[in-house]
Image (cartoon, rainbow, N blue to C red; front, top):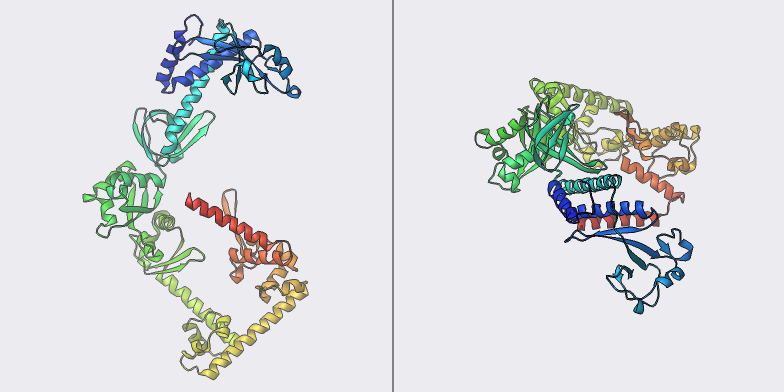
Length: 561
């Protein structure tokens, strides 16, 4: 693509040919040519000069113009491209458009008679003879044009594909590099990494392939289009293509969990009572789901009816296993599932696959117990609580078992519950109930007294003892951990009190919290620490309130947007 000044139309013909080939705007190619011609002119007239080139879009004629800008005296550095107001005055003579010398202000040609003298920012333009390029200059110009064309092509590709992230795309396999598949997607190339392929599937050049566009990034070497066949969203999009009810919004895919190439679970819900979501996804004789299975290399798919009731949804998610009982702990985000003994292997699945997919689908940690294991655990808890009431309240075994059977689990519940709840127990009258509560309170008060004595012996100060929300047992635990004053407490982190998780070398490790045995959660720990800081004057409550208001305002604006 050598450029010469002999044939002016050659510039336009070259620009149009390149633009057609690369599917970009011809104007971008001409701009690249103008820049390359300007570089060649600077090598001829001087690198410090400000030489600009304009190519006429109709005739191909290139006009070379030297520009000098009026600047303040103290910032004048380049005498070849800049001049002061005083230096500009001799050049400020009557001129008109089309002449070899003229002045512009804000990009517009001005009449020097009416302009009233040069001003900062005015530009003095002077037409200079065009440059005949030598071989080296022509090669340099070619490189500039190619670079500009590549940049324009990358921008076009990025603009074309940035909105296609999250959709399915069809392509043709071009080649394989270190296990990664390079896919021709029409106006560019995309990459399917080996860890995004299903199982051991292999492709040959010119094979057709269907993938999910996982991400599109703008990078220095051009837009990078990352594909995936293992993403859960790929399955969801395939079902959207096969099931018209999903495409129309009558059926919604609520969650997808996959073990790529082996098994998957997909939860669906119907917003039309007359349409069965599972049946619609299966299709006549399984035609719809079979089309998805074939695309996913035979991956078995369980279609689950979604339910807003979490235990019911979990029972569905563990299919084909039967569930006897579900115990949900929403605060801890955990759930226990009790299954018949003969259903245990089916509920867990091969290598834990079934329970793992159900956990991904529901977003909960699932513990699976057999009925026998759950019965043994309940018996152990019953015996432990019975012994607690026998030892602390001086009760016989039968009476202690009555308390446990009525749902009492600790001394605090016995000590501070309404008397009426004790009177419902067989054989308990008002005097007996009062006596039970008195014994429980006496025991708890004695425990508190001993805990406080131990804490003071360790060095706990009154500022911490008087802090509302901390029990004597909590204060004793803090003292054993080296927290003696309110100042010490205020410097603690929430996870140091409530516990948390850290990740090291890709493995998660549990950090035990000082107050974790007392069921203190992260939110409660944060509130207590912030209260201590306010009491010490470290934090202004007004600033705290304004920060919260600001966050709420941002949230509102985001919602409105």
